[in-house]
Image (cartoon, rainbow, N blue to C red):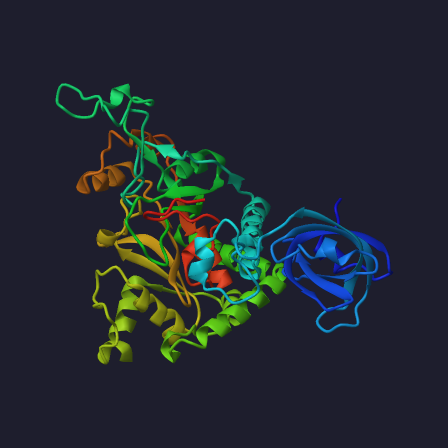
Length: 478
């Protein structure tokens, strides 16, 4: 195995021969020696290389600037300098690739996140984004580990589908028809019979419906894959391509679903706290520095690490949507007209309402249940009151809703009637209804947008900063 900088920072210092490869973060010539600071992506920390010009000629080192890629062989020794306990005394340097300082964008100075975003193809070399993407990896691993350790099966739902799941948004159409000469049928409509699949198809907005099919045979399953929304949303919380985690469980009712969601999210955040301490420390310092320029009311309610521990260490408060509305109506914020959006029974709660419940009223994460059926999807189990469904949303500090789920309607007639009420084709979703005809069973599930989770854990303010190559309206570079 190759030696990484992470390895070299952990082993005992014994003046041993080592080999290190990576990219230059900083460099300076102090006369008789040069100091080169390198990072290879294995850790947020850097390793200092000391180059003695009596061993390696200055002219060989002179072209090495920030961004260059090197292979250095030398001795790992204790450092007398400040900021590190070890360094490498270089014995040989091989230059893999140079970087013109007039062109390489990430020189050692402060850059705006917008500038870094414009150079997304290189941003993984920066300290901030190296930390973000290592944490993203760790969270993904923790998700798979959690479900595997709890008896779930990982299923791959289709990326190309003929259904829109729940009318969740505009869809990207998939076609092989020639756009310059689209075939039409006798009615003058697009003749999808000549298309590759013989019908209209799109990129998926959710793997939930297919996951339900698998759960009603395998018991407990989860999907973790890309989903797509063709919405013209240029916000800090929306992407056109993002990843979703969607577990579905047979024989789980609403209470079981809430228990799983709370346990799951506490586990993955706790896993990141345990395994990404150095990266989280970098991001917390970045966030504190960024917030110095904000007004007091715009700042995060608590520092990053405190916020993450707050979620893992507090039991989630559970209450109904109706109880939440009563709390909001009785709140000082409502009485003093501080809420921007109206509060009344039947509304789809806004982020400001959700954050009030979490940050001001309960001061802990919240799970809301039993929402009005008119603002929720067709597949949610209807309560006996005829007005609400067994939905649940998990609310977090700083963002509001992070998880949405429900107990699914297992009764064939009720599901079919609800679909007809909403104008959803029962013929198109015949396969979904079949699971309610043949051995139906109580079942539940939820969805968590992976980027929203990464955004919460890293403290990044823009969702485009937590996915390597963001896709958004008019944005499909790299």
